Image 1 (cartoon, helix red, strand yellow):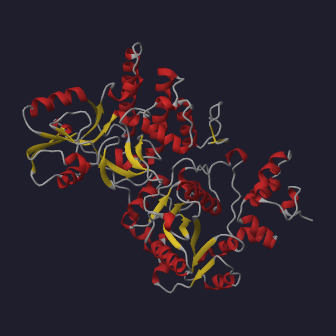
Image 2 (cartoon, rainbow, N blue to C red):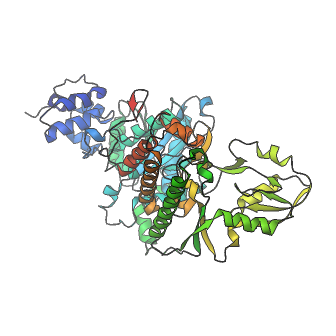
Length: 574
């Protein structure tokens, strides 16, 4: 007679999920069936399905996937790594009585109006029952799953980018990249639910619950929610009998929506048939500029005896970045270095004797407005959410109030859309008149494709990185690496090349600090980077090279490269 799964682990029906890992760890002969028992019983949802029905056949119908992850992979939830955006969550969640976030998983290849309708219907049902829906996420399936499908064309990075673009118009729906980018293989949808709930409870509000939303073709997933959790199933045409049969099992927290709207007939498959075509070649016009600020961003590292060494390492990092960008663009975009000293000298000569209002970090004008564009961390970041005073400086309102009336030239380092310059103009007093603008990057003879600053890619450098708002509303700067910065929108890196580019940047930083001083600690770095890492969970005494290695490991999805000296926060490894 086949043993029940808990018997395979030497337990009885009263087992607790929290003890399963320790029990499994002590078992020497880890047969496939023992491993399956471990996988099922450690899962807070599927363990309840099995406890209720004592049937592996019901587990399969409820969608259980026997993944290949081992014990040393079980910290893949990565709730310390800020991979999932927060920007569209309802503000002031602390004042909401019963906060709930919606989550739907699937191929979404592509995402379409039917998916949006499904989430909106779920939001309506839960709201009517007393829940406060503060946001929603689509989690795109892992590459290992999508790659088995005949319609596989785009990799996970392209699919995520496409979904983010589609959801730009929504004020509450976002893409959660965790499942498709930050785990090694296919995982159960229950893992995605559990991880998102833990993540949001840690970073936003400990009361947040995640409600799983799905279509009637997967109605038997609802078995997972018979004893715990929240779930909403929207019926789809062709699945009515199974839908009604499963609905008989309904209990608290299980919501069934009889959908009569024709959007239920929409499918990603049909849309693919209508729109499938060869991918258009991306057009690269102009040159890619890298501003070289010299040692300005490294002044806090300068000592009497290391200036030469620091200059050499800075130059090496610059050369590596130029090569990395050139390789990333496959030679289709010329990458040139723009030395800031020559740029500033030319600007000073051209603007000598003229009254200027300056926005650049290094140029000095008649008035210098310390202004930053504010973004949400780990979000799409195609547009800034606000224009704020630069960190450590007065508000923009206070700064502009000190500008004397008159005519001025507005100076900035670069301008792609012109939105920042327009916003600054709008904030100036009526008697402060801008006659012209001077863009430092525009003085190149060539057309400019994009401009980046070297310092933004060096962790711990001063005044470096994108200005972002954390979920706790703290404002700081983050380096130009995923998941903190979207390199597609902020640095024109193709979505499919973001991860590899980021890993290389972390490796370059690790080598930079290893050669500069391998004993440098987080407390020695720029204040903004220190605060970011503190938020994630690193102590000030953590070596910077270990922080680099931690990020490399998370991005490579490998525990094997963790530093021998493990990093701890509150007694737990992060």
